[in-house]
Amino acid sequence: MNTENARVQMRKGVLELCVLRVVQKGEAYTSDLSQALKKADILVVEGTLYPLLTRLKNAGWLEYRWEESKAGPPRKYYTLTSSGEELLATLDKEWNQFVNAVNALSQS
Image 1 (cartoon, rainbow, N blue to C red):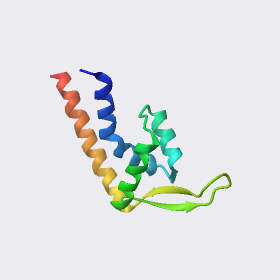
Image 2: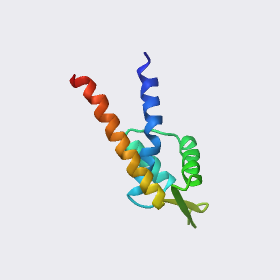
Image 3: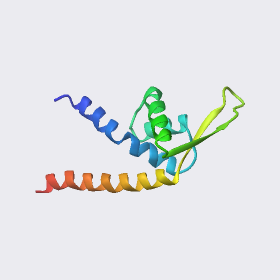
Image 4: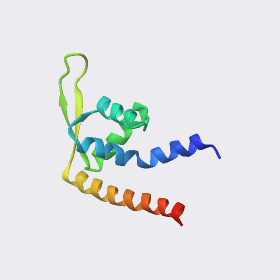
């Protein structure tokens, strides 16, 4: 088994949860999200992040506002919507149940 491929697939599976957790902490610009994910060793390329943010926004879980930048084009700053908060709570619960189930296998 290619462990690197397995690791990549696991990261992809939880990326949505991770992005929502970062945005829950406060308004975030794409580079803020990217840096937080890299710091947590969940490396993603911006080409992966932009479609995910668009999908989350179109689903009504994120919203954004534009802010002019002194050094370049305007920036989108993302925040969670109330339905995004609800989704995050559900995903957190599901994640914890999943981790507990996986950990239980090694304790049996």
